[in-house]
Length: 202
Image (tube, rainbow, N blue to C red; front, side, top):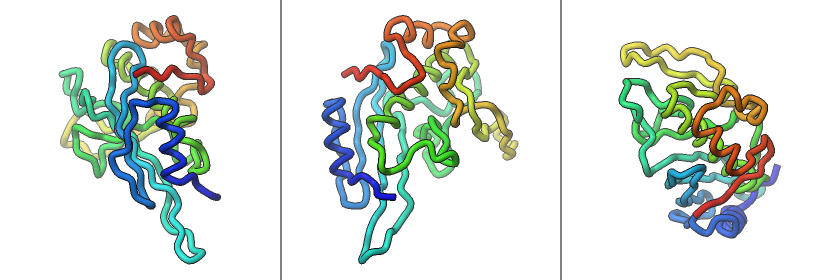
């Protein structure tokens, strides 16, 4: 499967949201920083993209995208309750800068032939909506699967839960009665649906 180049991703991303700027530009990796504002809070996010690399008719590497929120910091304990931020990948990342778990790589929900702006950005915005709701209520309303870590620092066993993955945003509109403040506000203000329609705000 062919992948979009860093240049192709850059042109499409900056055309859709001019706040994004490339901070690293090489033939094998692109890194962007830009702003997303799901409701009122603006988030500075960093997106790192590795396309397929080719060398003398050989495909090298495994393409992937990681997304981090760099301002304001969302981890490790933004609620001040001892709870870790849910639905993030902390392994191999600084505690305060985990990668977001907003889709399930095992389900091939995204492939490198797709534009970041068409899928990754909408999924990131919806993750931020669930994050803001979690800050308010302490309950993560997103569904799917992810190995969440327990609160205790001494326990190293991950447990399976219904969070983050192929069903993360399913029934987003039909479950409005179960959501509070943050999600309800956005549904009312922007008419969010389960498709990939999304507002890009400066």
